[in-house]
Length: 88
Image (cartoon, rainbow, N blue to C red; front, side, top):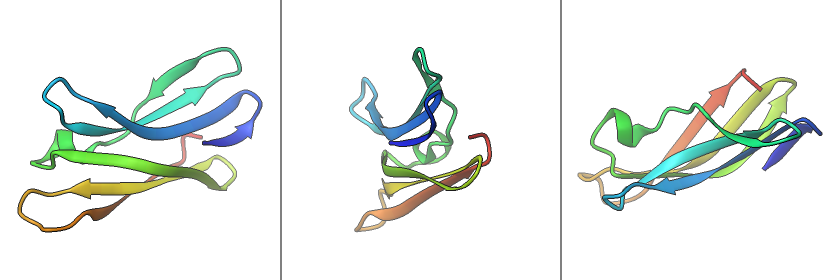
């Protein structure tokens, strides 16, 4: 999690689909409630079954960076996943 202010808090992690696939997840707290924030998930764009965020931070004002891992079926190991947003 990272807090830009008391009314702008971000969390990143994963959610699990009915078929067992893990998809990256970002959520935003506006001071009153949490809501899912849009993020690109490689599993929804290509044949990448599992992806997850493990950290999120603000690298400069109004800029977020989320990092984690993704699994690609034809590659033996986990690969780095990173997303950058200026929506924060």
